[in-house]
Figure (cartoon, helix red, strand yellow):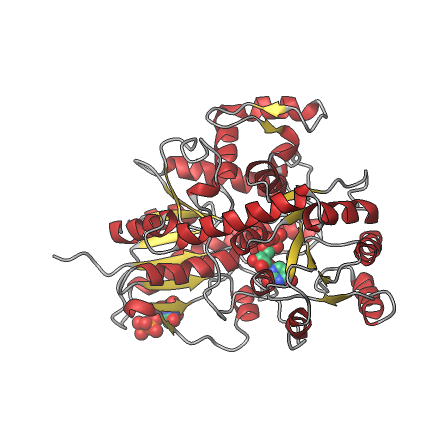
Amino acid sequence: MSPPRPHFLVLTYPLQGHIAPALRLARRLLAVAPDVLVTFSTTEAAHRRLFPATPEEVDGPNGGRLEFHPFSDGTEGEYGGGGSDAAEFSAYVSSFHAAGPRSVGDLLDALASSRRGRPPVTRVVYTLMLPWAAGVARARDIPSALFWIQPAVVLAVYHRYFHGHAGAVAELSRRGDPSLAVELPGLPPLPVGDLPTFLTESTDPGHYFHPIFLTFRDLFDALDRETPKATVLVNSCQELEVRGALEAVGQHDVLTVGPVLPTGDDETSMFKPDDGAKYTEWLDTKPARSVVYVSFGSLATMGREQLDELLLGLEDSGRPYLLVVRKDNKQAMLAELAEVEMGGERLKSGVAVEWCDQARVLSHAAVGCFVTHCGWNSVAESVASGVPMVGVPKVSEQSMNAWLFEREWRTGARARVDGGGVLRAAELRRCVEEVMGDGPAAAEARRMAEKWKRVVAEAMGSGGSSYCNLLAFVVDG
Ligand code: UDP
Ligand code: UDP
């Protein structure tokens, strides 16, 4: 009997930084093998933000098909995935974990009893923050795979932490010197200040991100319950990783399959400003590698002081710049301020937008450097586009990502922030000069960025390491 037609259910937590790679992976699954069916699923509210109009089923290449079916997170449809309010965020994570398992179970049951001749789900693929997904699938005898949307070195750090090294990490972080090196088996020494903040700051039950720490703990518990071993797909390629990162994850099968990138004009954005994307016309008027692109991702909020310092530093840099200031956060006052000032006097050489198509911006020839909060999607999109970075990491694994590009890939610099976490104008200017100026550091960053761009393209191209890993995953079922 021939094996059943592969049908992947791709499940994702409703954050922009999770949805984008999950959707890109869904499309990638269709691209590498023939006749694959993918059902993509996130919460109903996130789904409505992604696709204000009902999405069509999408016919993929090679006879495959992508379908969409959201699950309920137990809320009345108000979008709650992100947000800057800690109490609201914690409450949302709790309701998500309370309602999610049952909704996803119902979805699997509905898909199993489909009368449309749809093959049953053969694999559940789930992103971070769904530690119960593997159990829901296993209860129905369906194998699963975790899609780890951060680099493998971070996966290895979490794994080590939850396997006997929590004490050592806690002890080192207590000493208060971020440069102290943590020795985790199989990994190079890592500065304790660059470890994921959920492991160094959020282990205390009173911390507002404690629910995230618990979610990671539950996720690694769940992986260990998978017998004989769990499968983990990593949104990175082996060439980008440090030695040891891929082996240091216990008995689990770790497959680098990324970094998954946009395939064209496919929709992955939950933010849809009505600005006609004029910034692309503006970019078209700028010389090659002249523009500083500045964005701190989909979650980080920016205070007034930080915005002032950014504008000052960017204007002083003497270079054209494209700055993203989101208006979705709770700081409505800031939004107004941004709007007024951006239309006015203070923006002499730059353009400010609420949101842009970042992957498109980074691949524009005019962009010469990316000032980033170092979310993995941003770092991956930048390295894939050959754009040097200035890192301003804040939370989660962002410092590890900055460590990677600064120390391992050598494609950028990390900015120092002051005691209040604010990046000052002079430091911004210094870093931009370091990666974009006429000096040897900038020449080296540009050269290395070009090199890594080629490496990523090869890994993702037909016959490349990530391509072959994903193909093997699909074919093995
Ligand atoms: N479904 C889905 N994606 C789609 C269309 C449907 O996940 O693009 C779900 C649908 O909501 C239901 C199940 O799959 O939960 C079976 O739907 P179908 O349209 O096949 O109807 P049925 O088989 O029950 O007649
Ligand atoms: N992004 C975008 N336009 C913007 C800012 C961000 O398209 O103006 C996208 C970016 O391309 C990336 C995602 O939002 O895919 C942000 O993910 P990341 O992991 O970098 O950070 P997070 O938002 O999760 O902190």
